[in-house]
Length: 575
Image (cartoon, rainbow, N blue to C red; front, side, top):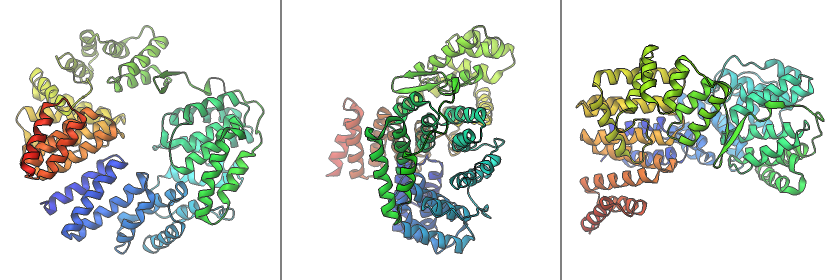
């Protein structure tokens, strides 16, 4: 049975999971466990996180049950949930109106005025014309996102000059200032600031073109092209992003913008109005249908605006993916290196690098040599340049099992780190790992930082310091939304927990690792983890669970002798 301390750890580790189905499933499981034990504090903490996970993970209507349970306590941890909830209301018609307003009333009773959330809801309901927005005394939004909210409001009520005057690109977050640029593209044209409009298009599209969650912003790019005489470009964007799925609100806006490019008979018009009608039914008015109809009837802002190279940065199709090249050789090299486990993508980046800089020198030459596989010369050059971190990274790839090779199953990580720990002195290898983690984090490359941290964990494990390895594996930093790396971190922590005798913690971590590998689409790794779970459940004498896990492992890897043997053992013991 889970102890109170184990349950605390299980709740808190979900903070480091990527938003979505895996995090929701993990929190639902741990919530059921703490409910069964009647642990009041645990129940509260689990539900705070579950409410947030529902809103951020695409199931906002489910947030009300855990949120209602928590509201009586008035804990400050709940403040950001109300910010997420207001946005979720505008994005999904399944989020109830009455419950949202009641929740905001209660939130203001507990935490004070929420003018930002009131404005978001009022704008969606078409009732913000007379609202004078003021920044809230407290919010989970950054200053740039708060400015973006004010700009959107001013644009809706026709104050284009004032909105444009608020724009600033001095600070950055995950969405800003790119979302502000997308909002201001057409207003810049109206104000005669054509160069600013083109630059806003170029920078915002380059930031959002590969982010499915930004379909609503991409709708603005389609509208911009359609209303500035760039219909061919608008059609290209519709073709490129038209099959994407996002929130109902984003899909509604995208279909409406697409109709400007494709015409009323294309089906985009009816789809946009269909979604708008769902919002209207929930809202009790026609605000969203009226807004969409106004967009569908929108006139040209300019008959012809030359977007030149800003329209579509240099692109190439790789399979079903469209690649937009970065602008500088440094960015091209960085993207190639970060995607070394995708040879076709990396080669595309290096080809473009060669076009721009056929004769690199210094560090760029060493990086190009490493990218082409000339590891010995690259290591020598990095050494002569005093770049020891990159030199050690290249040396590690010269070992028989390359560290950068993609993981096909978790055990491959064990084998790889064993080779590394034998090929290099542990102390220099760990020093290299720490320096590399610091460098990657300073460059906001959290995926690479997590992979290097994982290397250090296995070096410690294979040199006999399991406790230090376990402690380091607990430091699960953000991994950039990469399900694969998240799964490897969870798997590693789970196996180390098992080695140290904490089988309950091992079980929980491996279950979360399985969910993350499934989200990443790595069926080979998923089959291996299911087999590990079957073995662990047998040790715990949880024979029904062992049989289920073994069946899943066999289904994923029918040729696996290990999975079949575990299945037979589980069947025998289950009887």
